[in-house]
Length: 206
Ligand SMILES: Cc1cc2nc3c(=O)[nH]c(=O)nc-3n(C[C@H](O)[C@H](O)[C@H](O)COP(=O)(O)O)c2cc1C
Image 1 (tube, rainbow, N blue to C red):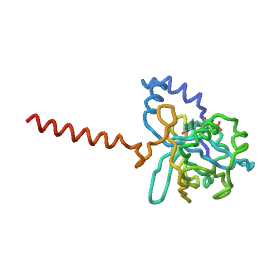
Image 2 (cartoon, protein in one colour; image 1 turned 135 degrees about the vertical axis):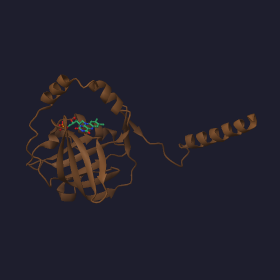
Image 3 (cartoon, rainbow, N blue to C red; image 1 turned 135 degrees about the horizontal axis):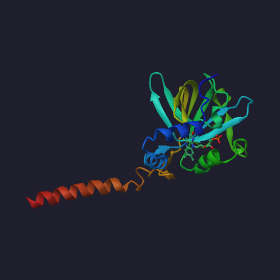
Image 4 (tube, helix red, strand yellow; image 1 turned 120 degrees about the vertical axis):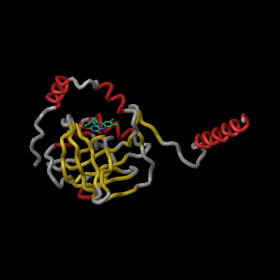
């Protein structure tokens, strides 16, 4: 069982305000939002066996040897209940048509999130969502304090590529990537054509 994370978000926020770090939370959030990420739902079983999941965009690969990932979880999130080393969890990478799941797992009541949803008890009996782009089956290896969030390091035990393309989150909106090779990637041709045209005109000016 992890100890030492008793400080509440309210305590941390008042501490940060007292320090007056000079970066407002609104500015920080807005500027962070310029950096596009994928969208995941991180799932686990709670101690009473109920499935739990929450939407998480702060997912990053960390190490190749051994394979490790991290997610940053708000200290008040239900995911952190009864956290212990080795806890199995799955990072479900949402596919481009699963915006509804991102919304469901970030807004619905915790015990209503799996209601009527298609999912399987998968690796280590952890809930695996269907129709996703990819998944990482992990066991919790370490927890690091990170202000009002905790950084959970997961040792990757299983990776699956499910095939669908990933959903993107940027500037507080969901996006789909342009399809490559189907005509939607014409912007590449546009840039190349413009580069060629401008070098020809520069050549002509000489
Ligand atoms: C696109 C998106 C990304 C999110 N990413 C994170 C994240 O990385 N970490 C986090 O703690 N909460 C994140 N959230 C918020 C949680 O999903 C939300 O607060 C959720 O209700 C927490 O679960 P809980 O209500 O069971 O505590 C995100 C929400 C959205 C819509």
